Length: 138
Image (cartoon, rainbow, N blue to C red; front, side, top):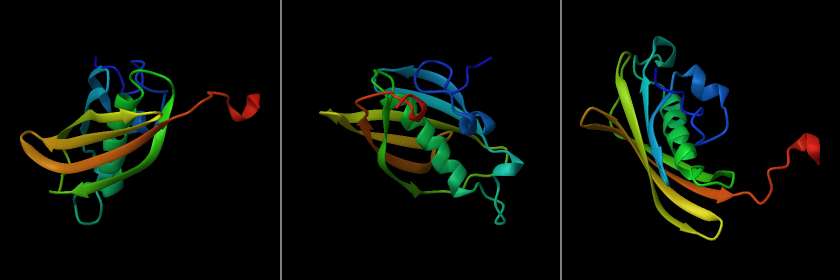
């Protein structure tokens, strides 16, 4: 069994990613590769994968890559370009790569593909947080 995207120490446990069936295939310093199969629940009225599901998939790859070194890192901003539609049953792979880190910030690119075909390109900008205090511990 392939571990869930957030079970391998590359990021905090995350119910949304698990509910989408996102699997972590590989991760290293500043990188992550994930897989997701488009389910009937992810398809919109046009019979293509909902953009929000594709964004969440790419965002999860981004989160795994930018949290691969510690400390806790969150998204400061992100955007996505949808290139081709994905359909129910498609197996998608997202590959995240760190482009640069500077101070507490970083820039990461994520490519979402179906085989050799590009489905979406995502760019995330990260920011490391200074403290991991939770709201309850303040």
